[in-house]
Length: 408
Image 1 (cartoon, rainbow, N blue to C red):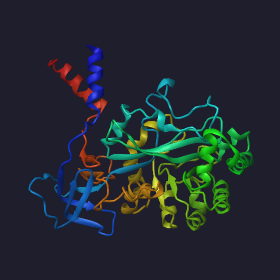
Image 2 (cartoon, rainbow, N blue to C red):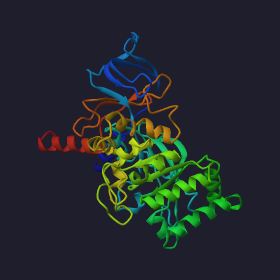
Image 3 (tube, rainbow, N blue to C red):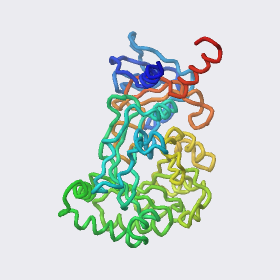
Image 4 (cartoon, rainbow, N blue to C red):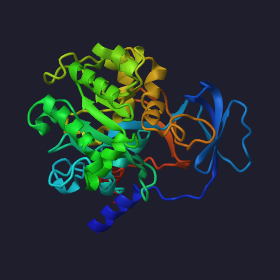
């Protein structure tokens, strides 16, 4: 009986494929993040998995299923630029963790896509908060190279992988220093030597390194302090064919103009406020605001590198964007930082990130302000399919409410 109930809970969380339909979201305040800007009392027309029309004078077909947004915001689906969705279920249970492989004979070539758990109960908790896509990251262990990450969608449990080989994590701050022998200089020499010898390196590591050199696999470099950021800028200048993305950058605001001039995008945590070590002495919650003001393209994500709960925090991406607004980032820029900007940074903005005809219909209808903690989604669409708003937690809550009321 218990096994049957557990299976029922799991199956309830898996969105089932549905036949293509036409859906019209009407009377919405549409934040298109396109040249159309904000459209009041607008309509978004979805057919199958695509957006086919957007505007304030869209004809609604007779066979369309109509959803009245009641004047509330309608935005692109949220895109968490950092997560470990589907890779970690329980931090204290190693058999549920697939974000690192310290015993493997390779490092740069470690690929997380093979370990994604489509039945993870963590994915629905992000989905019901409006997160429709996420970049999933490996975690470095014995090397500066963490491995290869991917992009996932949170809707189709049968095929969560959206884009494999989307990024390569490289640790170049204190974590990289420790892995390379104890000094940052060793970490940088390790990286340069690995790239220099990549043409002759065999196996998964060689394949990954050659893809980095060719610009096919962007390097996401984790750095925090200003000198490491400046070294990364110099590295990018030495290797113009390599696509570099910066992650962390707690002290980025101190060299924001240089980052902007180098055109390196940054994935930033808007809650990083107090120094936690000597890499983050200049921490401030205005970091995202100051970077954006300098012209840096930012994506906001719950990095929480010092928190055991990091794998579960992708669901908080809207909260983090809202915190940036509270610290001076314009509201529209904060919304872009969790929708369009991550799509641009990871090279999928031709399919995602804005509400435009031809793009995948990842759309969220909100109950209120998307960046306010108390105003969650009223409806979530991923590739044109409306998602269930259940999680393991809500299903268990309903089950035990019934038990307490004596109805079971």
